[in-house]
Image 1: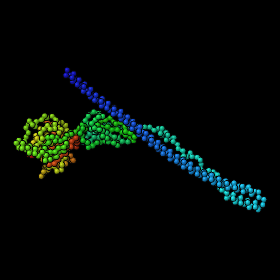
Image 2 (image 1 turned 60 degrees about the vertical axis):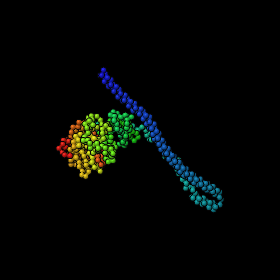
Image 3 (image 1 turned 90 degrees about the vertical axis):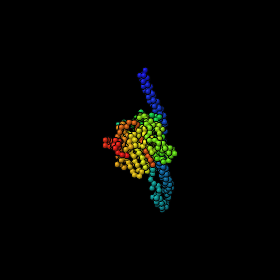
Image 4 (image 1 turned 30 degrees about the vertical axis):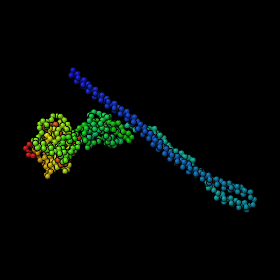
Length: 496
């Protein structure tokens, strides 16, 4: 019976997963169908605009050429009309001279005849008719203004759609996720010299499968990438995965997206637990600031109780399950001189990294980790369940690693930004100068309970940056410094 139930449960789980895949595919197809219709209308509109533009150019050329023909016609007409006018006047003068010469033949008096003959000779010599060119000044040929569109017609007839670029292929082996940056590399399935640029699309997700149409985030784009590789840097890895896809574009159109890939971008993300922080601390997500006026009247009552007690919480109050997650408001507020705030997310395995930046005028602060059963009067580094480095800028500067109420002075400059590396399974807690990548100190122990990031601040403020991967430089330093750094046991013989 139990075996059958388990088998049925597996079948139900398989069917539910398959139904989820089909539903996601249906949504994808519907989304694609709407896209086809919308894109087809858009492309037809663009085609109309292109041809309207071509018609406009042809109309402008036709108008310009027609004007040229009319101007040539007017010029030739004017030249020929002028020539006709000159010829008409010359002909009239010549006819008059011919009539005079004809009448002169009838003169009988030799002297008068000689006089008339001399006049006719002089007038003939000066007659315009004999200076005329009897050829038209211009030709009636207008064929030089004709246009041969045969080549252009062939080109237009050979006009084809610019092919849609094929989808690129993301080369997963060349993709890299490191130092809160992602490098995506791709290639075309075949050479295409018409490619102008690429568009990279990406989005954060908590799903490890194919991208979903109804995901919680929209695609973000990086346009006009000229190469076949791009690096997104300065990311905050506040989701488990990121989806990536690429499309190629030519001068006219963008091609289909590549098959999407999903890369893991998991990192520790936490906020500060304001519900259990000291009443004199003002907490906002990843920022904590000392507030001397916070809950003043209430603090006096707490101090009265503190004087009666031993300052150490009872086992009953501090005991919590070693694998239970931290719940906001599930523990008492820190009080007394324990100006402490913890992170709201427990570390139970793996390697994690976060960074802390203190205000320049911060008088005193600690950065480290602690078990969840840290007492409300306990201070970081003064118990065997907490580890930290402590910076004191009050009166004189001290910089020390602390654990189990023991301290070791660190011979290093206090950094502007502190990196915290926690290897839960390997039992290591290291602190780094973020700017110089200098290893400040390493605790080595065996963590037996879930850890919480811990912070103490007095007269100042701290900003915590999470969602960070373990930097490559830190990984390298961990390997090179393994076995050479300080350890928690070295603090047992050092006075605070």
